[in-house]
Amino acid sequence: MIRYARLVWIQVRVSAATAMAYRANFIAQGAMALVFIVLTVVPLLVAFGGQAKVAPGWDEAGAFVVMSYFMTVRAILEGVTSPSIVDLVERIRSGAFDYVLLKPADAQFMVSTSRYEPWKLFDLLGGIGVGVYAFWLRGAPPAPADLALGLVLLFAGVLAMYSMWIVCAAASFWVVRLDNLVYLLGAIFDVARWPIQVFQGLWRIVFTFVIPVAVMTTFPAMALLGRLDLAHVLATLGGAALMLVVARLVWTFAIRNYTSASS
Amino acid sequence: MIARTLRAIPTLLRVGVAETVAYRAEFLVWTLTTTIPLIMLAFWTSVARGGQFAGYTAADFTAYFLANLIVRQVTSNWVGWQMAEEIRTGSMSMRLLRPIHPFVALTMSQVAALPFRSMIAIPVAVILLATSGSHALTTDPLQLALLVPSLALAWIVNFGLMFAMGATGFWFTQVYAIANFYFALYMLLSGYMMPLDVLATKQPLVAKIAHYTPFPSMVDAPIRLLIGHLDHAQALRLLAVQGGWAVVCVAFGIAVWRRGLRRFEAVGG
Image (cartoon, rainbow over all chains, first blue to last red; front, side, top):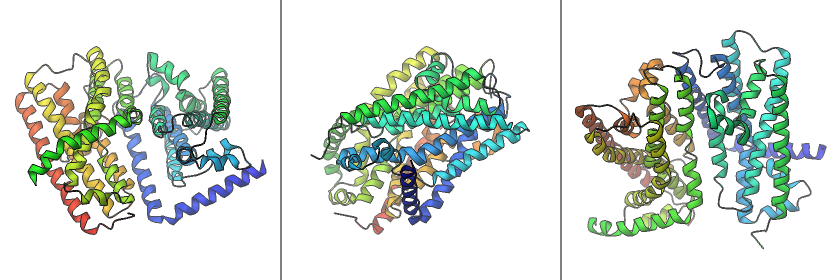
């Protein structure tokens, strides 16, 4: 366990050093993050200019809490997981993945933590900022118990999303040329910016059960607002745990079928 | 020179088509990543449910964003990325050695991808539009006649600006920041994220500024021809404005290219 923690720390330091080597780029990324945060919230600002609700049960403060979760989860994943997965696809193609497998550490761990994008920190701060704004709109901070539950479910949401990335990564063992699957996943995750109640009929079912974006943002946001009942809390935690187990199984199955590109 | 270029065009197109077909799975995935119009569709129809928002009913929003999806699929291109990558890796040198202007060669390689993109996007969007937004589709013969030229002009405006962006790669090896900034402006000012008159309800100044930029020519104008109720003078004016911007943007793209080329230091070999 301690060994793995030390590995993470080393990889974070290497990534930070790389990022700092391009200081102008770092500042540009910060400015861009700000532009995109503003851009992402524009529809909410416009909608609430003439309306009290965007969906049944979702007023301005609530919708901004969901948006805050969306930005936070995305910042974490784009900062931690997706650069590593993009790396993985490249390594499978070039055959360098063999070296990862040879290392005396779990391969899934190695590919999930191989690279970070430190400037996603700006996006993370933006996400937190939107959350603070939401509770300022509501006029009351979240109760301590709700805050704790909201943070636990944030973790569950991140794990759920992470599991989908891992399944995608496993898919690249078979279809190497599909390195843009990662972008497709990101594009699908874009729906998580709205409360799930925005979607109707079939789409709501799809985004709750098939691609469970509701688990990633809507339910944690409801928990933070103190509106999530116990059944949903358990379903969210259970769903995230289930996805993690499935992802692990798919990963181990895929790796057993791995045929190196180099030899 | 011109005759030689014209003779090369069919071959360039064939090469482009072959490239698209060779990477069809990747291409399909890229096409599917255009989810923003559908995400915005869900949001705005939810906002307008059981009433109206800024004069739009839920059905109006549905028609708007499905039209948006078609326009985006048909008019987008990635020439900026292609150029930036070629400059960064040095393969731009090869392109410069060929006896044909890179602007023509790159245009053809992008045009060749169009049929494939349309094949995937258009049937889906047309079916959706016909089933849930047919009331909004225009039946005016002039608007229908102007639709194809309008889409073509939207494509040219977008291409000109993307070409200029790619050419900034001569100065900066990483054009991502510029590209992102461009895309942010595009999303806000073109009508991609929301109809411009909806934007005007909360941000009248921003919406007004938008109409002085080339962005509405890329999204807003073709959508209005497809689903708007315009009189003939309005329709023709839309097209004229698009035509003006097409000339300006292509000229701008080539001007940036010329300036950049003087600074070009070939990387690699």
